Image (cartoon, rainbow, N blue to C red):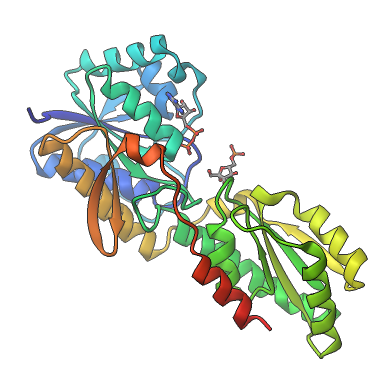
Length: 321
Ligand code: ADP
Ligand code: F6P
């Protein structure tokens, strides 16, 4: 059985490149002769029946925009059977038999629940966190890392002038990838992530030693999952004697125009999701692994954890003497 009519929504935290993914889903569906609909505000819009038909022009001029033109929401009702039934019913009454969900692992679980209600679903990994397994990168991660690196470049200038240390708190709820990649790309002296135990006293000692040997600044990247950067900066100042200032980058990391990497990834994954639906697949999440497009059972994705790249973590520390 194949799909004739599909819908697309964005859900959970937004990420740069979601629009490029929406565009790819809509244009790929139309190219393949399907009807295509868009749902506004994620699962909340699905339950509220906020659904409209799309044409080629509906997704014009969005590939370069951050955020999501479909808007997004976190929806408690979708966690209930009643909510899931209502959501599926609103699709079925329009003859929509397939749904592409662009979001994180929570959104994938919602998609899986809709499969149980007779809707064929496909997940596209849209989150800055890079915490979805079975894809090397998620859509938005590359842009978020670029934003952090750009911010650290600026912080370096003023930290060097004042011979201070900069503690930069970055996003990534349970995943240290933003901290890891931005830290390696910025020459950070320490990268504190939830996946690796660390000793703040040892970080402070290394910082003090480095300053005594002529270092003029120090960058410490802290993933929000390990605690507040404010506390880290306070403890480092007390233990090292080096004035440590915190910068919390917050939602800045989720905005702005997507990088070409995120646009390319979003375009490839959005199109692939549609093609897999047409081929009869369902309840899968798409990804790019070692350059190959793959589709993996959502069940498997949401019960697995993405491995943390310890080699890269060690490299970052070795290079930042
Ligand atoms: P993300 O998709 O970025 O991980 P959330 O974890 O907030 O974001 O999930 C987004 C939405 O997906 C939730 O608000 C909820 O509507 C839906 N969702 C999450 N988990 C489930 C679940 N177990 N069953 C049904 N829907 C879910
Ligand atoms: O999952 C994406 C993310 O940006 C996380 O990195 C962060 O912890 C969370 O969303 C913030 O969510 P909100 O915007 O709802 O505060």
